[in-house]
Image (cartoon, rainbow, N blue to C red):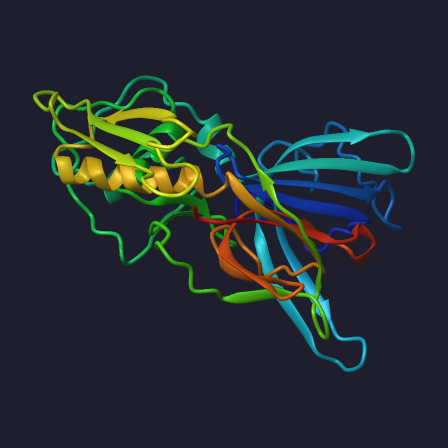
Length: 340
């Protein structure tokens, strides 16, 4: 773990006694880091105090986190970058340790509200507006599969910079995430059928400890109404519905409706694409397989995975994880959303 203030390296290797990175889709800022460091590491005092250039101060300091897995039988080691986190809090409990809390890099646009409403410029597109709305020092990347398109003339963004970035993702449609380098990333929507990149299994050479089930009605919309709020497009609307399974709108579950609108929607085909992606994103986390397994830093949000437990095979996408940063922090939890 290293600490940075802008482009300046403050500490190349922070000693972490305990720590976890937790991520969950559906949260405005999906990632959160908590960690404990010793007050004194043999040379330095790790309590920031009033020092604005201390590695753990909260004046813009960011932590670049990687996990190294080393073999106990040979010299092999594998390093996986986890992400970049903005320090938001620290606390000295006077017990010889410092507690630190940091947020994923979407905290930057969340904090950096626009001082007044702003309009896209002439010739603006979804990509150019995403780059323009990103706060200074935060870059934006796009999945090559996403097709850029113009922003409607006459629209305006409110002061909420993060909400504007999320609206671009919903209207495209795309997934708004950050990557291991701290960039804002627009990913392509999840496909209908997952092609697993990783299998979590029990038995011989397996790492899976348990794989239960959880389910919730909260936020599990089975009907999405997407509309245009652009001037002159009042009649543009599309509806996406879950038509099969236990969450079908015609079944005993009943319709649970979410209505969404955006000036970026200018045609019925755009509205339908957005509605269908929102429907999949809302249903996916409802039925979840909470997996407990050995820590695996490769696992990321939206990864398609296979869960094999007692001969039962389940496919789905990672909708959340709780990754320990040290061996002493115990097991990892992975939430795998299963399509209905």
